[in-house]
Image (cartoon, rainbow, N blue to C red; front, side, top):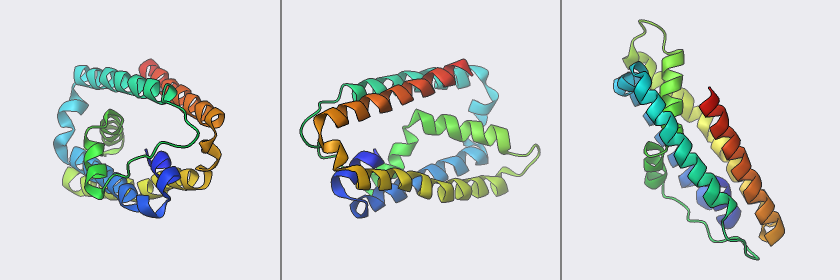
Length: 173
């Protein structure tokens, strides 16, 4: 999402989207660590259901990427507003899986979730900025390379295959 928007509109115009992704995910992690994720962390069935739902969603996304129309130039990607990018994190199954898994793994036994929750959120926000920003940098710098139909098709198929590899690894876990 960030790569496509930055390739089309440049990094500067996508900065609100970058901030929305990073801060939206950090807030989600903080709230999960404060207790929102307890039902998910305690129920193996809910975890498996989220895993399967995430796998289905990611497989659909991979299909959409691999079969996206290829034209002589990039289709204009929509740049999300700060608030839209924040909200997107809350409907992203990968984000939920990561937030719950991280909280379950790293929250110290007996640790106060009201202290560790905001700390986890802050750490994830700070880490997200360079991670999401790197996708923006790649998009902004490589946008012209992807304007050729053959390169764009190869790029899309490669991204789709990498996404499917993630799904397979997640299901084998």
